[in-house]
Image (cartoon, rainbow, N blue to C red):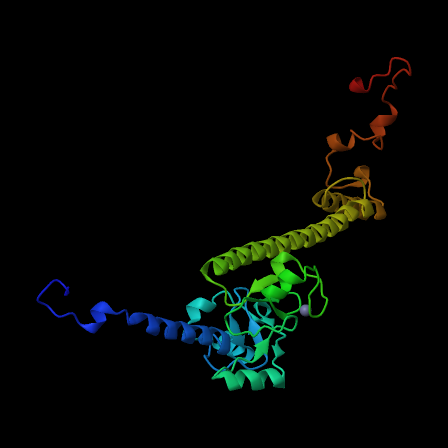
Length: 281
Ligand SMILES: [Zn+2]
């Protein structure tokens, strides 16, 4: 260890030198999040879009990713399925005066500010956007001006429409949960609509089907109808030819005698009108 007599401690054992490096890393991390596109790592230039998890992208990089589905960090982009999953942001650029003052301070080249309270969008303050209109404002403005319409363009919004830009881990977890809930809801709504459509189509089909038997005869099914019409056509064919069993050369004498057209029928005793029983006649 050192300092225990006899040994000479090295500087890095006594002084924490790591901290500065960490601070630098943090600055770079912030800059990466707020200045550069999360897909292409190029400077953020309009049109700038954001996903439901609040990351910032150049729109052309998102389009390119959607076409190729290839990006160095594509595992972080699976929640962007099409352009509907991102919102084009309305960012307020710095005025020339602000630019001049921040540039004289140092190497500050953050381009955007909150349109309400004028805070710089440099990663030090929380910024949010409205999914309904895409306007970007600082959290401070939202807290100060309590309103249910967008502070910038007056479009109404709900709490679920507020997305924190480049939030911390907890905030991103929350955004993820909200995203899955939102998407499940949309899915269910779509399903319900589809079911409704199918029901109405089926209903129409049923209506059309129930019309058919009414149009044709009685309540018999289609197959019955076919049999009936065919037997009818046979009868009418025989009738049109003046057919009579008695004249049929193929019918036997015994068969002919069953019918009233047979000669023997004239001699047959007639039943009494009171005691008439069809079983015995
Ligand atoms: Zn707005």
